[in-house]
Image (cartoon, rainbow, N blue to C red; front, side, top):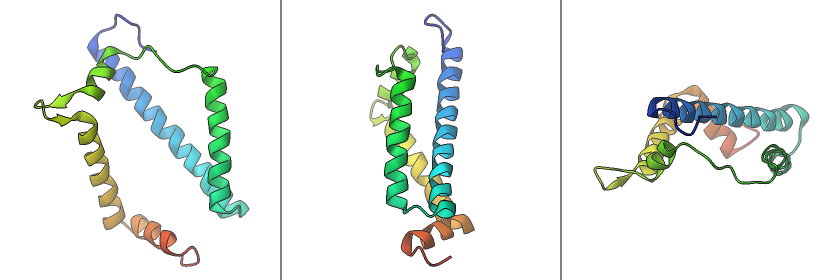
Length: 124
């Protein structure tokens, strides 16, 4: 997506666009799973395993079975870099995600409903 000799700014934009697209595709996959579980009545484990096989097959078709390569160098620097030479960047991203998910689960009605569904499917 990003030309090899592009500027750092363009490479960062390309990586951010890829992240947003990945989040949207993941949300769509979750919506499809949720639809099959809640509206069609398929047991959650079967819906999850079935969609995993479907999405894996789609990924193999889209990539023609080859690994994805040629990512911008900034991506490698970002994912293998450290902050102050000590803390790995992926750890900082992970901690940020934990904080966001924790706030959603602990402070919203939506998060409370997720806890309830996770405890007992019959409680709504």
